[in-house]
Image (cartoon, rainbow, N blue to C red; front, side):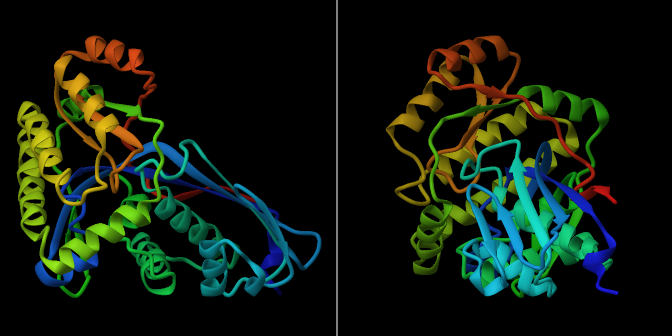
Length: 333
């Protein structure tokens, strides 16, 4: 029996991610020469993928637009097209996606979309893929099939969940370990991290493409070495429960990261950072590739002062906690 005839609706839920240190060393231009290291946490903001059995053999795909096609080659959305091809699902589906956070804001939405889509499609087929297998398949689509200038952070964190330290060897093999963080440190970390939406969206491909080019040419290799070193120190600070040190390292990370490419920051972002620090922020950085999206601020007891200052700038706050479940199917009938 065709597995598509044996279900009605499947919903997958996949977390976005918040990089906590070492970001950028997951790019192949860096790890293929030097090996990568980063720490990152999944958060309780999600990408949801709804897969419903279609009455006809065609496919209806709804995201920021709607496509109605008869075969996968007609699909315009690159990730949808390649994921359907990879899983050999080619008919009889309606697929809808929606997210808690807009795309192009630095929280890894593309990786969450890919992992959640694959999770749902393999559930349709009644085939199991481990979290690591899902992450690698999502990376393969983005990096090899679509030739995106992306790394491996987004897909792994979205698939596995939790707060982990990831090491990438020169061959691209990823290993990981849970960060040993006490419950009291976790609660304080969640309380002190503040996310503010800058309202500035950007195509991460532009920023990442420039970053990869600079790494290949050698012009930003020393900065990336420093970012990896700060990432290792950040892991130690979290495990030691020294969150004051972690906040200071966050600022040190941003001061290095902003010099990796010319389009990493701009006058508006620099003003937002300056205001946050003037009002008590211990550390800060833009999440993701840079150039816009969310500003992560570490508030060491100055929450209200920072919050009011950012409100005056028109930057809304989004409160988050960490997710420890990773990508999962939440509905299947």
